[in-house]
Each structure stands twice: as C-alpha cells, then as structure tokens.
Amino acid sequence: MFLGTHHPKLDDKGRLTLPAKFREALAGGLMVTKGQDHCLYVFPRAEFEQMARKVAEAPFTNESVRAYQRYLFAGTDEQQPDGQGRISIAAELRRYAGLTKECVVIGAINRLEIWNAERWQTYLDEHEEDYAQAREEVLPGVF
Image (cartoon, rainbow, N blue to C red):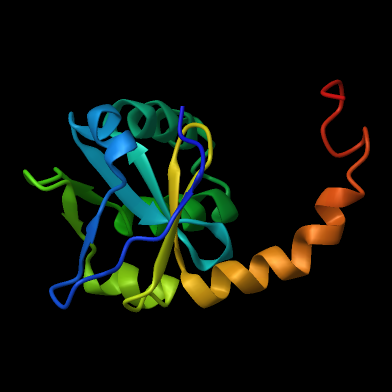
C-alpha cells in the first residue's frame, strides 16, 4: 500500500529517486503514465496490467473509449528502478505533468502520483474544503 507525501528532486537528466519505503514494492518493474489532474501515475507492473485489462475490455466501438485507451497506452512508459532507486521520466511525461526540479510524490493506495510541487500545493489549496466537508454521498458506506 502506498501512503504519504515525499519531496524528491528531479535531476538534470530527468531522473527521480523513488522514496525508499516504496522501492521494494516497485522492484519488479513499474509503469509511468499520464494521470488525471496533470500528474503522473506510477503503478507496479502487476497493478497496471490488471487495470489495463479492464480498460482494454471496454467497447472500442465507442469513440470516447478509443480516445482514452490511445491516450493511456501511448503515454505509458515501462521503467525499472536503478540501483539507487531512480527512474527516468520521459520528456513527454515531464512536459505533461509540468515537472521541474521540485516534485512531490504521494502515495495513493495502489499507485504513486508524481506532481509538480507548485501544482500539488495549488491542488491541495483548492480541494481542502471539499475534503473537510466530504459526506456520505462522496464515499458511500465508508463513514
């Protein structure tokens, strides 16, 4: 399970050091893809494959489904962390997420999310009250 907030830096070669506590779970390989809200998602390979199968089962005769599938799969990069726990973030993925030197990596249960630090703070500021006011209809049966 991926939890917490971390502040690694992106180096000049576009590499990001994964938080040490997540490295074992990602040692078998990982997939980096474009996420919603202009962040990047990092899935363990097995988790991504499971999700990808579900996405692939959607009816490709639907134009919106095809567009989503194309965008998701074309924008995914397979990575293997190096001995220091670093992964290379492809230039297109860095552009999409607006990544600069200052990054934030958050745990989101089954995946990590990589954010531009300023965008993450803006996101938190914009959604803090929504979280504080969340009610039953947001997550039925949880609270």
